[in-house]
Image (cartoon, rainbow, N blue to C red; front, side, top):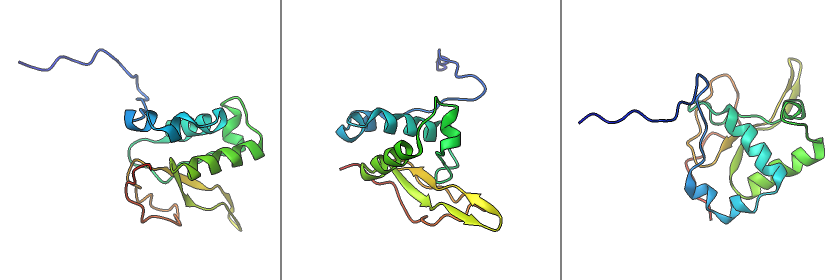
Length: 129
């Protein structure tokens, strides 16, 4: 018998889901509201083949209701300390302009992201504590 079609239609942009194992973990549940929002911003960019090329800047946060530079830095640090994200490239300023820091979701393999000059690409999936 053929499988029934899923009842949910995600639309042309698809959807991003969080594994229940992550959502049930205390590190996720104890996140500050700012860190949760930043995680959603990073997750919204993930398309299944760009893990490691995710960014959260003050400019990007404006379309999500805004966030002060210090609050954003604290939220990103919190997400890294709880091992929910990894920094894959440090912020750079050069002759070709500024390039933002890039991040990867910790529960997915990091993708190669050609041309992004990632600093940290040797991460494999790591489980939470």
